[in-house]
Image (cartoon, rainbow, N blue to C red; front, top):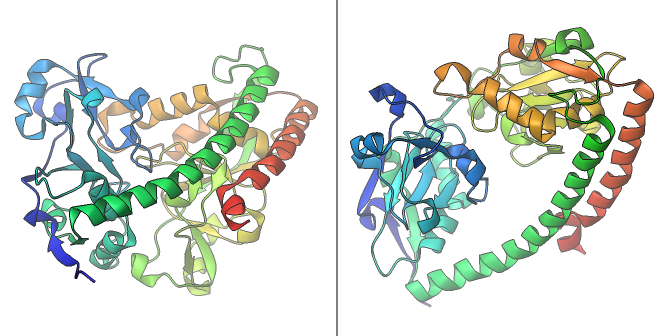
Length: 386
């Protein structure tokens, strides 16, 4: 059997660099022009989300010469949602990027780029970053860190074989996820049918502020010692990576001791709480808290929103994840020229919410429960385990 060599990424890369934020050089973002790619332009699997693209002028693009992208460049997120990987395609060009994405340019003909994308998202690489974190609450990677990433590099035929095998498994998961997305779209369509656009209030419902409709809005903190202080059992600590729209992700769920939890007693999760991500690339993602995690805590990147009796939590969650409300939350998070997306407690309190009769909210919740039963039967985990 051929021995697989292990190399540093710098050994096969022609260039490893990053960009900058145009506003720091006096340039503003534009409605059209050269594509400016940020972390949120790609989903967790590296798929391109064209609707998230912002633009810069041709003059700005020329000024940012170092970070002008080429087809085949590998993008690796080094701040915020660390470890997200994408490959630049012709459809994205011309394009530039900011300092949160490292640009890895590889021209070696013995390297198969889909394999590089696969290995950079694998535990082999992720564990290297975990060791670097060493108690830091929010890890940012340097270009030196990227240069020093150690990866196994088999011959090109083996690279292709491994990447294609992964793609086959991924295709199965994608097909199942498409079915789940269709069911999510069904819920959203039903919401709009019953309640209209919640931002424009097209059906003329009563409205009120989130502050008046909730009994608690608050976020927590990272326990002293950060990741190094987490255990494999204890009280759950919910982080932004666990919160997706209408879905809770158990992967990477952290656990803390009773002593650590006592220091976060002001953000103790209760049944029917709604979770809202309030910082970073995952800002505005929202889901209900699973009952089995109670009593849990949240860190500073996740807010608890606890409804009073005029608002059902499932209804609120669907409102927050409805397309027009997601756009509103994103616009709030990116307002004011901040370099990192964020929604403050005050901004959540000031949100205007529609308040249909509780009976109608309950009808919608009952519909969601029926659809969620179908989602459970269709989930990739259920299908692959069968």
